[in-house]
Length: 483
Image 1 (cartoon, rainbow, N blue to C red):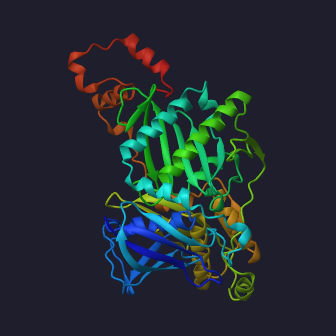
Image 2 (image 1 turned 45 degrees about the vertical axis):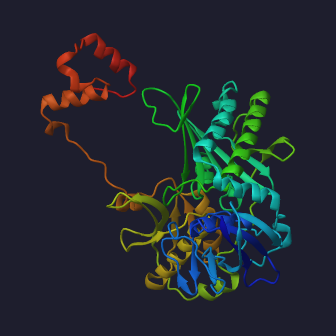
Image 3 (image 1 turned 90 degrees about the vertical axis):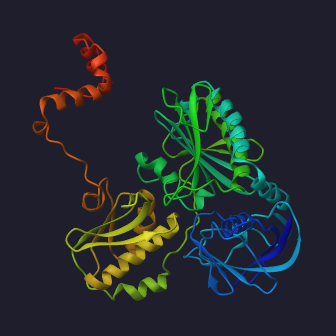
């Protein structure tokens, strides 16, 4: 198949970091974005755009890459650190699958808004990267079959849910860190993350937020197992579970990035080994602990908080310049990020700052990383202060966002409090639940609603017999209380 040879080089840095790629002509700009993420060790979590000959590329998921040797492409990634790559076509060859043929420099380190420091960077492994690139040609069906075989091993572990529940496992594999968090209540939901430690803090301030702190702001794969009842609307089944696999994003759902599949398969195999170790040693979740498994299959418990390299959203010099510019007010405002359905049924993610008295400022987010969300919230707060003066207190309920903003607000002498509820934001933005006055229902409608809640098939009432004793049993066995 005809292919273009591309030299992809990071611009504006004091050291040469580049990769040379063979790319078949059937690929789109979205796929090129995914490949660049893999080639430079990035995390596929920030916004990006392409320019071809200084013109923005629209519909990147549909536009095929068609180039001449005179063309020039610029790839922009991450609005905070703003990494810019020059993509230059240098030859036309033959190639069936994407392949890296040459490289200079180590991988990049995402979420470090400073000149790249050597100790943060991992070595580039061309052989493994090319194995991941070969997964572009793997069908989704084959991928699911491989996942199914691994999950069979997981559910064969006696009482496996006891050891997956709220357990976070850090997997070190081929210079990548993959985090797997599991929220196992009635369903078993395993969340996969690549390099999630650099974007989201492992330990949240409150134990109740531990799972959300690892899964909320990063694109990930969700593997969900549910006890099979009458529903079997899943891609595949494992034992007595129904199972489905999806790529989850705060902004939207999309297909699983092809090159991630191999990383996730390897990580899932390691995860099963870690859970088997937990079952053998009777290691269950405790707040502030995490399990780590390395390339040598060594499993160990990690205590305390995971260290994350700090990224600066505002320089200390800039903060000092701003401190004395604003008038003070005594207002308490609320700040949060919510994902909501719009009128067309599409999910949109809003950053929200303000209160009911002075109103709320909102900004639609087109990415899902904690770093960028924090950056946008800080800028929204400063823009608000320019209009109404510096607030005295900011209330937040998300531990991860609070942990970033609290450090910055302290520099401005503004209190930043972690609270359980944000009633003003919820009242303004969350849809109100329909409240039904029971007295407005006619007796027949009320009885039908109660029967339906108890699981009676009200569509077939003419052909079934309902006994008083049966209803008593249904009520006693139900958790709800009925008058």
